[in-house]
Image (cartoon, rainbow, N blue to C red; front, side, top):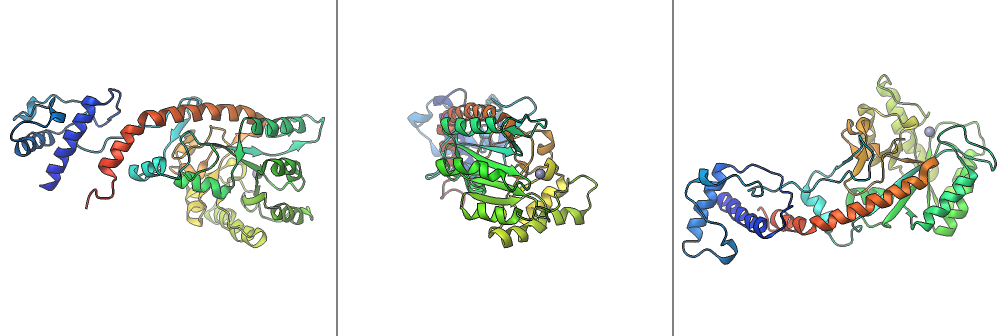
Length: 378
Ligand SMILES: [Zn+2]
Protein backbone atom coordinates (compact mmCIF):
# COMPACT_ATOMS: atom_id res chain seq x y z
CA UNK A 1 0.00 0.00 0.00
CA UNK A 2 2.77 2.40 0.95
CA UNK A 3 4.43 1.52 -2.29
CA UNK A 4 1.38 2.59 -4.26
CA UNK A 5 1.24 5.91 -2.46
CA UNK A 6 4.88 6.41 -3.05
CA UNK A 7 4.71 5.67 -6.79
CA UNK A 8 1.77 7.96 -7.08
CA UNK A 9 3.57 10.73 -5.31
CA UNK A 10 6.60 10.35 -7.52
CA UNK A 11 4.37 10.23 -10.56
CA UNK A 12 2.85 13.55 -9.67
CA UNK A 13 6.22 15.03 -8.89
CA UNK A 14 7.56 13.86 -12.19
CA UNK A 15 4.55 15.18 -14.02
CA UNK A 16 5.13 18.58 -12.50
CA UNK A 17 8.72 18.39 -13.56
CA UNK A 18 7.75 17.26 -17.02
CA UNK A 19 5.25 20.09 -17.39
CA UNK A 20 7.44 22.82 -16.08
CA UNK A 21 10.80 21.44 -17.03
CA UNK A 22 12.52 21.16 -20.34
CA UNK A 23 10.86 19.43 -23.23
CA UNK A 24 13.92 17.53 -24.19
CA UNK A 25 14.03 15.67 -20.93
CA UNK A 26 15.05 12.18 -21.86
CA UNK A 27 12.66 10.11 -19.86
CA UNK A 28 13.07 6.94 -21.72
CA UNK A 29 10.55 4.63 -20.13
CA UNK A 30 7.75 5.05 -22.58
CA UNK A 31 5.06 3.00 -20.95
CA UNK A 32 2.70 3.82 -18.18
CA UNK A 33 0.80 0.94 -16.72
CA UNK A 34 -2.90 1.36 -16.31
CA UNK A 35 -2.63 0.29 -12.68
CA UNK A 36 -0.09 2.93 -11.89
CA UNK A 37 -2.19 5.56 -13.57
CA UNK A 38 -5.28 4.40 -11.74
CA UNK A 39 -3.41 4.37 -8.45
CA UNK A 40 -2.30 7.89 -9.20
CA UNK A 41 -5.81 9.16 -9.76
CA UNK A 42 -7.15 7.41 -6.68
CA UNK A 43 -4.38 8.69 -4.51
CA UNK A 44 -4.77 12.14 -5.90
CA UNK A 45 -8.41 12.09 -4.89
CA UNK A 46 -7.80 10.61 -1.48
CA UNK A 47 -5.04 12.94 -0.52
CA UNK A 48 -6.30 16.05 -2.21
CA UNK A 49 -10.04 16.08 -1.62
CA UNK A 50 -10.38 19.81 -2.11
CA UNK A 51 -8.44 22.22 -4.22
CA UNK A 52 -5.39 20.79 -5.88
CA UNK A 53 -2.11 22.36 -4.81
CA UNK A 54 -1.04 25.06 -7.20
CA UNK A 55 1.89 23.05 -8.44
CA UNK A 56 -0.35 20.30 -9.75
CA UNK A 57 -2.91 22.63 -11.24
CA UNK A 58 -2.36 21.22 -14.69
CA UNK A 59 -3.01 17.72 -13.53
CA UNK A 60 -6.68 16.86 -13.68
CA UNK A 61 -7.35 13.56 -11.95
CA UNK A 62 -9.76 11.32 -13.82
CA UNK A 63 -11.53 8.24 -12.56
CA UNK A 64 -10.91 6.04 -15.54
CA UNK A 65 -7.37 5.09 -16.10
CA UNK A 66 -7.98 4.33 -19.75
CA UNK A 67 -8.87 7.94 -20.44
CA UNK A 68 -5.38 9.10 -19.61
CA UNK A 69 -3.52 9.24 -22.87
CA UNK A 70 -0.14 7.55 -22.76
CA UNK A 71 2.28 10.36 -22.19
CA UNK A 72 5.86 9.47 -22.89
CA UNK A 73 7.25 11.91 -20.38
CA UNK A 74 5.48 10.36 -17.39
CA UNK A 75 6.92 7.35 -15.70
CA UNK A 76 6.23 5.83 -12.31
CA UNK A 77 9.68 4.22 -12.14
CA UNK A 78 13.18 5.72 -12.27
CA UNK A 79 13.89 6.88 -15.78
CA UNK A 80 16.96 5.98 -17.77
CA UNK A 81 19.76 8.49 -17.45
CA UNK A 82 21.15 10.08 -20.58
CA UNK A 83 23.40 7.82 -22.56
CA UNK A 84 26.97 8.75 -23.46
CA UNK A 85 27.50 10.73 -26.61
CA UNK A 86 29.37 9.03 -29.43
CA UNK A 87 30.27 12.46 -30.79
CA UNK A 88 33.92 12.62 -31.75
CA UNK A 89 34.29 8.85 -32.04
CA UNK A 90 34.79 6.98 -35.29
CA UNK A 91 32.06 4.80 -36.79
CA UNK A 92 31.64 1.40 -35.14
CA UNK A 93 33.07 2.66 -31.86
CA UNK A 94 30.62 3.08 -29.01
CA UNK A 95 31.08 4.71 -25.61
CA UNK A 96 30.34 1.89 -23.17
CA UNK A 97 29.23 2.32 -19.56
CA UNK A 98 30.36 -0.01 -16.77
CA UNK A 99 28.75 1.31 -13.59
CA UNK A 100 25.55 -0.67 -13.07
CA UNK A 101 23.98 1.30 -10.25
CA UNK A 102 22.75 4.74 -11.36
CA UNK A 103 22.94 6.10 -7.82
CA UNK A 104 26.61 5.14 -7.52
CA UNK A 105 27.25 6.69 -10.91
CA UNK A 106 25.51 9.95 -9.99
CA UNK A 107 27.17 10.16 -6.58
CA UNK A 108 30.56 9.81 -8.24
CA UNK A 109 29.67 12.16 -11.06
CA UNK A 110 28.30 15.04 -9.03
CA UNK A 111 29.62 14.41 -5.54
CA UNK A 112 32.15 16.66 -3.87
CA UNK A 113 35.82 16.10 -4.44
CA UNK A 114 35.33 14.28 -7.75
CA UNK A 115 36.91 14.83 -11.16
CA UNK A 116 35.38 17.75 -12.99
CA UNK A 117 32.98 17.14 -15.89
CA UNK A 118 34.84 16.63 -19.15
CA UNK A 119 37.86 14.98 -17.52
CA UNK A 120 39.50 12.60 -20.00
CA UNK A 121 42.49 10.28 -20.09
CA UNK A 122 44.41 9.44 -23.25
CA UNK A 123 46.41 6.22 -22.88
CA UNK A 124 49.32 6.29 -25.33
CA UNK A 125 51.21 3.19 -26.40
CA UNK A 126 54.89 3.55 -27.20
CA UNK A 127 57.26 1.01 -28.74
CA UNK A 128 60.57 1.94 -30.38
CA UNK A 129 61.77 5.52 -30.56
CA UNK A 130 64.26 5.42 -33.41
CA UNK A 131 67.66 7.02 -33.39
CA UNK A 132 67.76 10.50 -34.92
CA UNK A 133 67.66 10.40 -38.71
CA UNK A 134 66.18 6.89 -38.95
CA UNK A 135 62.77 6.41 -40.54
CA UNK A 136 60.27 3.94 -39.07
CA UNK A 137 59.17 0.97 -41.15
CA UNK A 138 56.82 -0.40 -38.50
CA UNK A 139 53.57 1.39 -37.65
CA UNK A 140 54.23 1.25 -33.91
CA UNK A 141 57.60 2.98 -34.09
CA UNK A 142 58.27 6.71 -34.15
CA UNK A 143 61.20 8.97 -34.89
CA UNK A 144 63.07 10.89 -32.22
CA UNK A 145 61.90 14.07 -33.93
CA UNK A 146 58.24 13.12 -33.62
CA UNK A 147 58.75 11.98 -30.03
CA UNK A 148 60.26 15.31 -29.07
CA UNK A 149 57.57 17.21 -30.94
CA UNK A 150 54.84 15.23 -29.24
CA UNK A 151 56.15 15.61 -25.70
CA UNK A 152 56.35 19.37 -26.18
CA UNK A 153 52.95 19.48 -27.85
CA UNK A 154 51.25 17.54 -25.05
CA UNK A 155 52.62 19.97 -22.50
CA UNK A 156 51.57 22.94 -24.59
CA UNK A 157 48.04 21.54 -24.92
CA UNK A 158 47.76 21.38 -21.15
CA UNK A 159 48.05 17.63 -20.66
CA UNK A 160 49.45 15.97 -17.54
CA UNK A 161 50.14 12.32 -16.82
CA UNK A 162 48.58 9.86 -14.39
CA UNK A 163 49.90 6.63 -12.93
CA UNK A 164 48.04 3.33 -13.15
CA UNK A 165 46.80 3.70 -9.58
CA UNK A 166 45.47 7.19 -10.31
CA UNK A 167 43.78 5.97 -13.47
CA UNK A 168 42.12 3.09 -11.64
CA UNK A 169 40.83 5.42 -8.91
CA UNK A 170 39.49 7.75 -11.60
CA UNK A 171 37.77 5.01 -13.58
CA UNK A 172 36.31 3.32 -10.50
CA UNK A 173 35.42 6.33 -8.35
CA UNK A 174 35.79 9.37 -10.58
CA UNK A 175 38.63 10.44 -8.28
CA UNK A 176 40.01 13.85 -9.25
CA UNK A 177 42.87 13.90 -11.77
CA UNK A 178 44.04 16.66 -14.12
CA UNK A 179 41.20 17.41 -16.56
CA UNK A 180 43.39 16.56 -19.55
CA UNK A 181 45.35 13.48 -18.61
CA UNK A 182 47.50 10.92 -20.41
CA UNK A 183 49.01 7.66 -19.29
CA UNK A 184 52.23 7.05 -21.20
CA UNK A 185 52.82 3.32 -21.62
CA UNK A 186 56.04 1.90 -23.04
CA UNK A 187 55.63 -1.72 -24.13
CA UNK A 188 58.15 -4.58 -23.88
CA UNK A 189 61.67 -4.80 -22.51
CA UNK A 190 63.48 -1.68 -23.73
CA UNK A 191 66.46 -1.05 -21.46
CA UNK A 192 67.36 2.38 -22.84
CA UNK A 193 64.14 3.94 -24.14
CA UNK A 194 62.96 5.21 -20.71
CA UNK A 195 66.09 7.36 -20.72
CA UNK A 196 64.56 9.38 -23.58
CA UNK A 197 61.48 10.09 -21.49
CA UNK A 198 63.36 11.07 -18.38
CA UNK A 199 64.03 14.77 -19.18
CA UNK A 200 60.31 15.29 -19.89
CA UNK A 201 59.24 13.39 -16.80
CA UNK A 202 61.50 15.55 -14.65
CA UNK A 203 60.67 18.87 -16.30
CA UNK A 204 56.90 18.31 -16.20
CA UNK A 205 56.60 16.15 -13.09
CA UNK A 206 55.26 13.34 -15.29
CA UNK A 207 55.34 9.57 -14.98
CA UNK A 208 55.96 6.69 -17.37
CA UNK A 209 54.38 3.25 -17.17
CA UNK A 210 56.39 0.27 -18.40
CA UNK A 211 54.47 -2.74 -19.72
CA UNK A 212 56.98 -5.50 -19.00
CA UNK A 213 56.81 -9.19 -19.89
CA UNK A 214 58.47 -10.59 -16.81
CA UNK A 215 60.07 -13.73 -18.27
CA UNK A 216 63.82 -14.07 -18.67
CA UNK A 217 65.79 -11.77 -20.94
CA UNK A 218 69.15 -12.15 -22.61
CA UNK A 219 69.93 -8.50 -21.94
CA UNK A 220 71.83 -8.87 -18.69
CA UNK A 221 71.57 -5.20 -17.74
CA UNK A 222 67.83 -5.00 -18.32
CA UNK A 223 66.65 -5.58 -14.75
CA UNK A 224 69.28 -3.33 -13.19
CA UNK A 225 68.46 -0.49 -15.54
CA UNK A 226 64.74 -0.87 -15.04
CA UNK A 227 65.07 -1.00 -11.27
CA UNK A 228 67.07 2.22 -11.59
CA UNK A 229 64.24 3.94 -13.49
CA UNK A 230 61.69 2.77 -10.96
CA UNK A 231 63.89 4.07 -8.14
CA UNK A 232 63.50 7.61 -9.52
CA UNK A 233 59.82 7.49 -8.56
CA UNK A 234 58.85 8.58 -12.08
CA UNK A 235 58.59 5.13 -13.65
CA UNK A 236 56.33 2.24 -12.72
CA UNK A 237 56.01 -1.33 -13.99
CA UNK A 238 52.78 -3.08 -14.95
CA UNK A 239 52.15 -6.58 -16.31
CA UNK A 240 52.58 -7.46 -19.97
CA UNK A 241 52.39 -11.23 -19.64
CA UNK A 242 55.21 -13.54 -18.71
CA UNK A 243 56.47 -14.97 -21.99
CA UNK A 244 54.76 -12.27 -24.04
CA UNK A 245 52.45 -14.92 -25.39
CA UNK A 246 49.63 -13.92 -27.73
CA UNK A 247 46.53 -15.34 -26.10
CA UNK A 248 44.23 -16.98 -28.67
CA UNK A 249 41.03 -19.00 -28.54
CA UNK A 250 43.08 -22.20 -28.58
CA UNK A 251 45.51 -21.14 -25.82
CA UNK A 252 45.20 -23.59 -22.94
CA UNK A 253 43.93 -22.49 -19.54
CA UNK A 254 47.30 -23.43 -18.05
CA UNK A 255 49.21 -21.11 -20.37
CA UNK A 256 46.72 -18.28 -19.89
CA UNK A 257 47.10 -18.57 -16.13
CA UNK A 258 50.87 -18.50 -16.36
CA UNK A 259 50.80 -15.36 -18.50
CA UNK A 260 48.40 -13.61 -16.17
CA UNK A 261 49.31 -14.83 -12.69
CA UNK A 262 53.06 -15.24 -12.88
CA UNK A 263 53.92 -11.54 -13.44
CA UNK A 264 52.09 -10.54 -10.26
CA UNK A 265 54.59 -12.06 -7.83
CA UNK A 266 57.55 -11.23 -10.03
CA UNK A 267 56.67 -7.55 -10.28
CA UNK A 268 55.97 -7.35 -6.59
CA UNK A 269 59.28 -9.01 -5.72
CA UNK A 270 61.37 -6.96 -8.12
CA UNK A 271 59.65 -3.57 -8.07
CA UNK A 272 57.62 -3.60 -4.88
CA UNK A 273 54.17 -3.01 -6.33
CA UNK A 274 51.32 -5.37 -7.12
CA UNK A 275 50.42 -4.69 -10.76
CA UNK A 276 46.91 -3.32 -11.33
CA UNK A 277 47.02 -3.26 -15.13
CA UNK A 278 47.41 -6.13 -17.55
CA UNK A 279 48.61 -4.98 -20.96
CA UNK A 280 47.55 -7.73 -23.38
CA UNK A 281 50.66 -9.00 -25.26
CA UNK A 282 50.18 -8.31 -28.96
CA UNK A 283 46.82 -6.84 -28.03
CA UNK A 284 45.32 -10.35 -27.95
CA UNK A 285 42.60 -11.17 -25.48
CA UNK A 286 39.76 -13.67 -25.11
CA UNK A 287 36.68 -13.78 -22.90
CA UNK A 288 38.26 -16.53 -20.80
CA UNK A 289 41.48 -14.60 -20.39
CA UNK A 290 39.61 -11.43 -19.42
CA UNK A 291 37.86 -13.39 -16.71
CA UNK A 292 41.13 -14.89 -15.47
CA UNK A 293 42.68 -11.43 -15.33
CA UNK A 294 39.74 -10.19 -13.27
CA UNK A 295 40.02 -13.12 -10.89
CA UNK A 296 43.75 -12.57 -10.59
CA UNK A 297 43.02 -9.10 -9.22
CA UNK A 298 43.86 -6.79 -12.10
CA UNK A 299 41.65 -3.71 -12.13
CA UNK A 300 42.20 -2.70 -15.76
CA UNK A 301 43.59 -4.06 -19.02
CA UNK A 302 44.84 -2.40 -22.21
CA UNK A 303 44.51 -3.46 -25.85
CA UNK A 304 46.29 -2.03 -28.89
CA UNK A 305 43.07 -0.66 -30.37
CA UNK A 306 43.00 3.10 -30.79
CA UNK A 307 39.39 4.05 -29.96
CA UNK A 308 39.39 7.40 -28.18
CA UNK A 309 39.89 8.89 -24.72
CA UNK A 310 38.69 7.35 -21.45
CA UNK A 311 36.13 9.04 -19.24
CA UNK A 312 34.44 7.99 -16.02
CA UNK A 313 31.85 5.34 -16.98
CA UNK A 314 32.46 6.02 -20.69
CA UNK A 315 34.92 3.72 -22.44
CA UNK A 316 35.09 3.90 -26.25
CA UNK A 317 35.13 0.33 -27.54
CA UNK A 318 34.96 -1.47 -30.86
CA UNK A 319 33.08 -4.70 -31.39
CA UNK A 320 35.81 -7.15 -30.26
CA UNK A 321 36.14 -5.40 -26.89
CA UNK A 322 32.40 -4.90 -26.46
CA UNK A 323 31.98 -8.66 -26.80
CA UNK A 324 34.08 -9.18 -23.65
CA UNK A 325 31.45 -7.57 -21.43
CA UNK A 326 34.09 -5.98 -19.18
CA UNK A 327 35.09 -2.57 -20.58
CA UNK A 328 37.76 -1.84 -17.97
CA UNK A 329 39.75 -4.94 -18.94
CA UNK A 330 40.01 -3.93 -22.61
CA UNK A 331 40.82 -0.22 -22.52
CA UNK A 332 41.94 1.35 -25.79
CA UNK A 333 45.32 2.98 -26.37
CA UNK A 334 46.27 5.60 -28.90
CA UNK A 335 49.27 4.76 -31.06
CA UNK A 336 52.34 6.88 -30.50
CA UNK A 337 52.62 7.50 -34.25
CA UNK A 338 49.42 9.58 -34.15
CA UNK A 339 49.52 10.69 -30.54
CA UNK A 340 49.01 14.39 -31.28
CA UNK A 341 45.84 13.53 -33.24
CA UNK A 342 44.61 11.55 -30.22
CA UNK A 343 45.09 14.55 -27.95
CA UNK A 344 43.10 16.80 -30.26
CA UNK A 345 40.32 14.24 -30.49
CA UNK A 346 40.33 13.97 -26.70
CA UNK A 347 39.88 17.71 -26.29
CA UNK A 348 36.84 17.62 -28.58
CA UNK A 349 35.33 14.66 -26.75
CA UNK A 350 35.98 16.40 -23.44
CA UNK A 351 34.21 19.55 -24.62
CA UNK A 352 31.17 17.59 -25.79
CA UNK A 353 31.01 15.61 -22.56
CA UNK A 354 31.28 18.73 -20.45
CA UNK A 355 28.44 20.43 -22.33
CA UNK A 356 26.29 17.32 -22.10
CA UNK A 357 26.93 17.02 -18.36
CA UNK A 358 25.77 20.60 -17.88
CA UNK A 359 22.60 19.90 -19.89
CA UNK A 360 21.55 16.92 -17.80
CA UNK A 361 22.78 18.13 -14.45
CA UNK A 362 19.43 19.36 -13.07
CA UNK A 363 17.65 16.29 -14.26
CA UNK A 364 20.26 14.02 -12.72
CA UNK A 365 20.16 15.89 -9.45
CA UNK A 366 16.39 15.47 -9.39
CA UNK A 367 16.79 11.79 -10.09
CA UNK A 368 19.32 11.53 -7.29
CA UNK A 369 17.08 13.30 -4.80
CA UNK A 370 14.11 11.11 -5.75
CA UNK A 371 15.73 7.71 -5.94
CA UNK A 372 19.11 7.88 -4.27
CA UNK A 373 18.84 10.03 -1.17
CA UNK A 374 19.70 8.37 2.12
CA UNK A 375 16.15 8.26 3.52
CA UNK A 376 14.83 6.66 0.35
CA UNK A 377 13.61 3.10 0.50
CA UNK A 378 13.74 1.70 4.01
ZN1 LIG B 1 54.49 -6.29 -26.27
